[in-house]
Length: 111
Length: 115
Image (cartoon, rainbow over all chains, first blue to last red):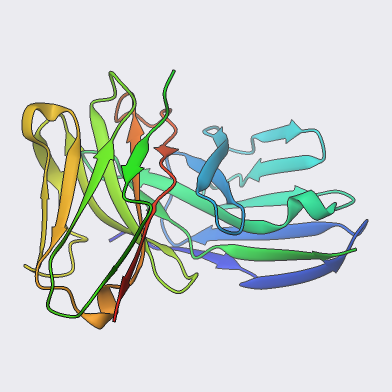
């Protein structure tokens, strides 16, 4: 089945530093979604990328989809304590559009 | 619009007992998914309903797990008999359609502890 790897698994940053998580697939993706799960919470949809090389921004968050549509990244500029949580990429695949989640990157922000 | 609701929020049961989790998707969402997150690790796919039909149940661990969605509205996930390794947070999610542009809306999850 579809496998999507994320790196790093964990990241501790000082508040104000930048953070990036990467999502990699061995196969070409039709799309990629990003979700955030706060500690004790549930995954919340952030954004979706569909086009090759696409870049989207949400305030301090920048999302990119690789030219070959096999990888994606989420970059947070000047992290804040509210950014704490686990960030997951997710892809739809298969005839019935099963959604497979990446392994996740847990972000800890040190005040 | 009411979100995805799950019940119960927590459940503590002994090994060998039965537990039934319930999920009410957002009204009008034909697609319903069950996921499990164990020990803070990845979110593992369990199965996917479109209306009342199981489209993909490739993630169901074994035959101790039974999911139903009678009438295509709410869904239940029964674990019988429960084992220690079944502990984790069970999430339900729904989406308006199964197309690539549809985001998943998650419920708050049911934290299952098997002792």
